[in-house]
Image 1 (cartoon, helix red, strand yellow):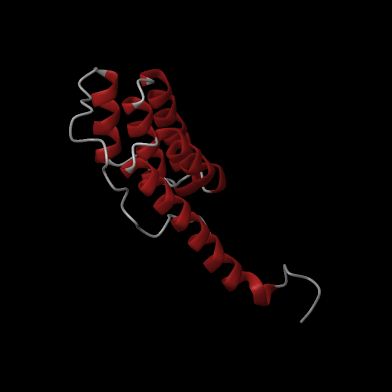
Image 2 (cartoon, one colour):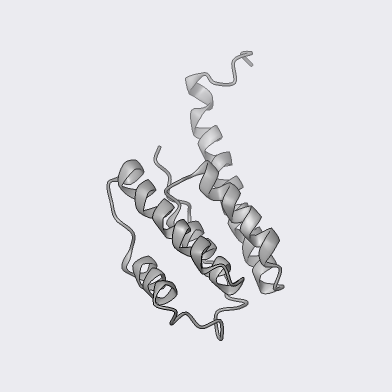
Amino acid sequence: MPADRYEEWAEDRRQQLRRLYLALLVELAGIYEERGENGPAIEALTRVTAEEPAHEEAHAALMRLYALSGSRTEALRQYERLKEALPKELGVRPSASSRALRDEIAWSSFSPEGRRNRVIPLEEPTLKR
């Protein structure tokens, strides 16, 4: 094997491993959320959005977790991060469900009932590359 891990032949495998890493972090966050451990769930999802700024599901889950934790301001900041990242990375705007969640939080109509222990969907992360 060549010494350079960044040769073109390794790109596909590197991308597969990156997608797996992000999916596992999202799954881990879902497990933490099911257990009511919002802090570790937030930490895992923050790592996802740092690695993949346009990962909308992770941003939406962070918004929900911040709101559940009583940090409405941070939840709204998370939406702004999403709103900035999506056009820059993918040329799109937040989905209707993300906008609706933002509105619920902004207008104080977000209700924790039925929101806790909500499993984060295990979808392939949205990747730029």
